[in-house]
Image (cartoon, rainbow, N blue to C red):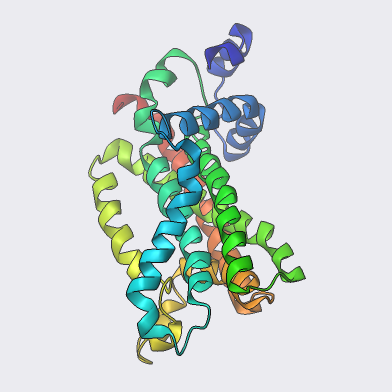
Length: 278
């Protein structure tokens, strides 16, 4: 890890760690090779001493799909045809979001020993958590494709929308991850509180049930759930074989851009005080 940074580079970056947002963004691009090493480290640590290793990334969504299908298929069989694809297309989005933001929330704290030895842009640490989770998301597309083949799913040109959908998903997760990472430095209970919020958030997002079952008086509230729109951005091409509704595209884009912008601003404003708390 340290070998990827020359002594001159560390000294230069450590002597003037930019104060503004633009300079902080330039730092992220300048440390692209370090980002690769951090992502490799995260993946190695996650599957260290695991017999199946990275295959858990593909096995986990399949197991969850089987469980959800057994539990809920009888309830929604009439309203949701091909229930396995419906569940799996939503679950891989949720799995990425939960994994990436949870990992990002502790990324600065967990790497405090490393940042004392070499200078790294603090925002690089949550970004590494997002990118490593994104690798797992792409791998989870393999079992999703297999289930689509087995259950008669449709492969249409609408699937070309998925890269854009994943970009918005990663952008939203990164913005929230930045807020959580900075907050957890000052308030260690942030991580535990977020874990509770995640459980409620999962059940408030139509992952294994159709939005149509939500009572009319609460239906407008679902529009305020960013994950609802992000899930539909993926589910429409995969499950329905069609382009996402423009309402979901606009809402998902707005949530992703605003959250990423706020997260980067908040993180950059707080980073100067990290040293006193780490």
